[in-house]
Image (tube, rainbow, N blue to C red; front, side):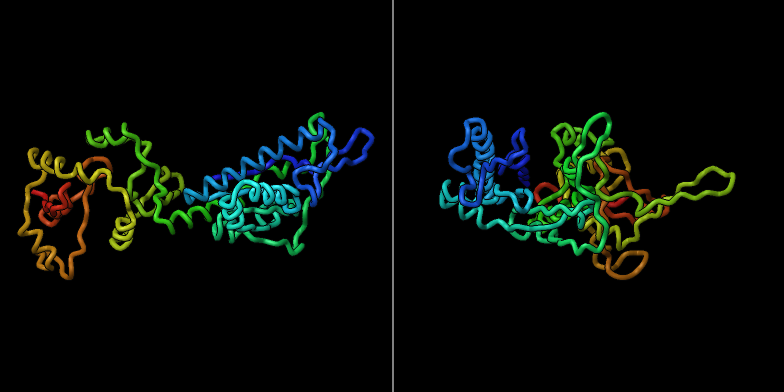
Length: 330
């Protein structure tokens, strides 16, 4: 995502006598004629930022990158952007006009004041942020106050987005990423991949599937605090395993399995018994066997198996060539 937000507007300034000098207007969004060299320099600097925003819009449009331009609703910067996109090229005008403007009041997203803000972004990405205040709650006043030995304008306290708005924007981006089939997991560094190959794992990376579904803390009077972990049910475990897209460690499984066999921990290949289990003819239990995956690369916590149940544990995975490899505990 690319995010653009401009600073203070340059529509007008006040002189030392309090008189207001207009720098922009609806008829002249890029600057009114006859400005002094000082004021013209301020307008030109802002126009350069607006022109850069149009370049960014074209850049993101070509690559399908999400973009968002935030600014107060009534700023003349919006008119300047429209004019600059038309002056840039037909491609820029088309890309700019394809963006969707979402208007909301900041108080509807966790702010204390009724500030109207417009978000011009990729179509259908931030639509859920639309919110108009119905004046059904109190608002903090606008003004200036003396604090810490200096004057503080209330507009400065609204510069940072509130936590609630940040969470809602994140939810919008997560929804788009999921819809596009993008992975939200950070890519592993080459060092991390090499470490996993050696059968080790850094504590920086969490397991693909947590060992416990949830934890609980019990207080037993004067006794020490007891922490309990509740395991996943088979249905929960299978659901999480299906949702896991990580596969960087799969090509290491066959080599690791061979090492486990040489150490006497696993015997195989054992295709006949595994086929019998898959066909519903297992020695214990009944019904169709769903399967269970055990990561032998030591990159994550191992599955504990009772000695009396070792003959019931079967490991199935696909090797680098796509062939099915099946093993059981000895």
